[in-house]
Length: 249
Image: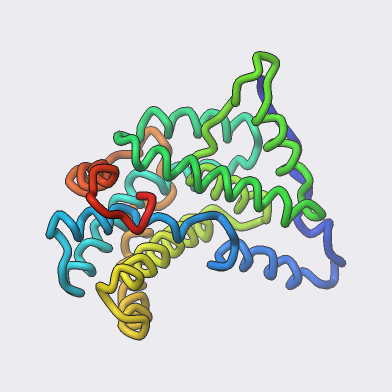
């Protein structure tokens, strides 16, 4: 079953003279209060700490750098492709490709859980601007065979929602890297690796690194997507075997 819908102009939900109002919806997508479940995942940091790969703030900074580098190489192509073609057919294709690309069960499940939550929230929150999100979600949940058509992976859905909201491909990729950095630093705070103030300082300092990595990996096709940090991927895959766990992944 293919879903190919025409995306309405995002400004249709607002007065034409008040284009700034659309920015409030765009900013909300990056708000940590949006209930997408990102803070239930440490992106492999908890497993790395218990494996004694990360034990100091300096180690944390190195971990974040490698994590963002891997995010750029592996996931930014899916964000970019979905943002540039925000339609159901492209989304389904990207979702299936990413599901085949992810190399461990933990990251695959985390991606699907967060993506499903983002799609559910976006379909409800932005219904008056782009009802197509709800239509695409509903159509993807059920098919004639009774099977779910997609896995709802996070990166393609993030790009899809960005495209629907009128966010350009470059900004969508930068936004995805920002949310990744925000979530892992938040996890570090709750794991008592850094305090809240030190975390804020670290996030500010890491912005230059994140921007450099965005420029390094931006605007690539999904055929160029690759995994460049196999150690991080392996460590995250060990998360279910931890004796005690605070996060889901």
